[in-house]
Amino acid sequence: MKKTLLMAGALLALTAGIASAQGGINLSWSDCGSAGVQGKTFACSSNTLTGAIMIASAVAGTPMNNLDGEESEIQLQTNAAALSNWWGMQATTPYNCRGTTAISASFDFTGGPFTCLDPWSGGASGGMNYVGGFGGPNRAQIRTICAIPGDTPITGTDEYYFYKITLLGAKSTGNNSCAGCTDGACIAFTSLKLTQTPGTGADVLLTNPMLRQFVT
Image 1 (cartoon, rainbow, N blue to C red):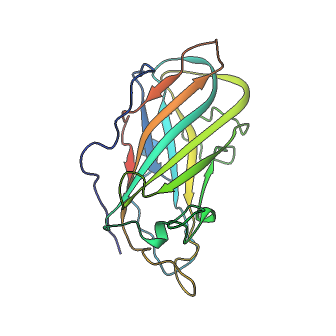
Image 2 (image 1 turned 90 degrees about the vertical axis):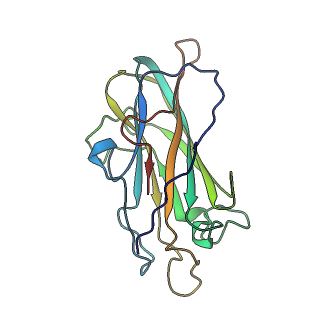
C-alpha cells in the first residue's frame, strides 16, 4: 500500500549566524544522492523492514581542513491528521508505542555503500533524538550529532556520507502491534552544520538541496 505526501509550504526557517556555503544536502534511500532512490514502499506484514535506510550526504561547497563533527535536523510529516502509534519512536508518551528501538542512527560507512566519500573512516561517535508532535500533530523531528577524535580535511566539491537513519519494523503486525504502519510520510533533511575544531576555521551550514532533500 503506497501512500506519499508532499510537504506543503516551507519546511524550515533557520536563523542566520553561520554563512552558508555553495554546497548542498541530499537525502535518499539506500545510498547517497542520485545513487539512491527518493520513494520506497514497505509492507506491513512483517516486523522486519529490509532496506529502510535513509542516507544523508552533502557537498560542503568550500574546503574544510579541520572537520570534526556534524549537527543536523530532519523533519517528518505523515498523511494522517495526527502522528500514528507506529510513528511513535521516542521514549516518552504519547509517542512511545514503538519506542527508541524502532529507529537508529549510524555514522559508520566502513561496510559500504561506497558511492560517495566517507569523512569519518569509522571513527565518529554520536547519536540522535526523535521528538513526536514537533511542529504539528502529524509531524516529528529527528536531530543527529556526531564527532571524531581530532579532525579531518574534506573538499568543497566531493559528496560525502554523513549519517544514516534506519527504520525498524518492530510492532508493525501481530500481537501488541502499533496502528498506523500504512501511513505515508514525507521525510525532509532540513539542515546540516559541519563543524571544525575551534579556532581553525568557520563552521558551514547547509540547508539547500544538491539533488533532493526529502524522501517518501
